[in-house]
Image (tube, rainbow, N blue to C red):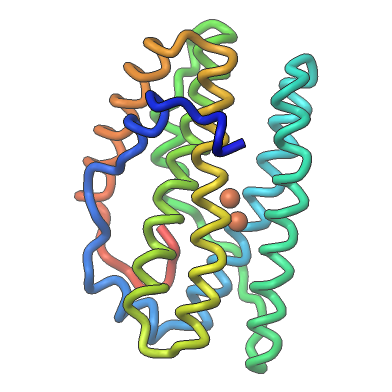
Length: 204
Ligand SMILES: [Fe+2]
Ligand SMILES: [Fe+2]
């Protein structure tokens, strides 16, 4: 899928604000909390992909592309859970996801089906892009080599996901419209990140 990604899509991916470097140290200390949070993020990603398939059953290519992502995200959930159990830790409760809720608030509620579809792709692209950026930070900045490698594998996988959602948006919607709306999403996410406190117990 990555190979078919247009130049255009490559250019428009790009978060506006890098993660605060202090976050890696905080996340390193709160391993149980961050792994719990991460496990739930993966489960939510799998569920969202299932729901996107249900809502877009008529979009053949999208359904085809999302089916393996469901499996992959569920596999991530299992891997993170195994990591918690291996350490004698347990899966805590899911928390209220402020970051994702604030992104949902930016989604068009009153637009036509195309606009709503576009936002459903772009919000996923953004969450995947930010997760990928954060895993990159962890895979580069953590002391523990095993954990650096652990996060590195997820980073590579999430990078594939965010390009997929942009590619799907471009497949069904005019590229110019995709680009314009993506720029708005990036700007909104930058403001959101600026206003959020830096916490080590969550992925976003
Ligand atoms: Fe994942
Ligand atoms: Fe993902």
